[in-house]
Amino acid sequence: MRKLNTLKKNYEFKNVLTRGKYYSGKNLDIYIKKNNKDKNFIGIAVSTKVGKAVKRNRIKRLIRENYRLQKEKLIKGYDIIFLWKKNKEIQYATFENIKRDMNKIFKEAKIFINEE
Image 1 (cartoon, helix red, strand yellow):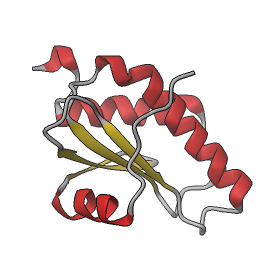
Image 2: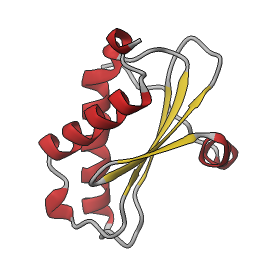
Image 3: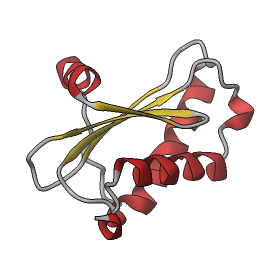
Image 4: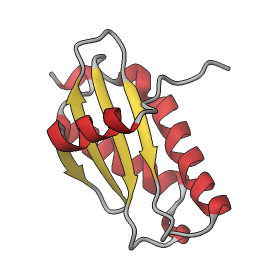
């Protein structure tokens, strides 16, 4: 199993959050910024207000898996940060809801390969 390219440092997150373009779905907020590299980097943040570690990690796993399934369809060269909305409960964290949000936002951001 191959690891995803991730943003880990605080300054990397801050850079994308301040300079990136903001998109919103029902459950996810996504910030996207060009990085001038030949691959995409992702970051995932889930607030502690959502729940304890087990629930937060489940949301992160679902987001990571949805991204993994769609990454081949995306244009390369972006930093993408996924934020789970604080006011959304854990029951909305289903595979289908996250997939629907991601598809909507990626189409809106025009980073699907066939959308150019």
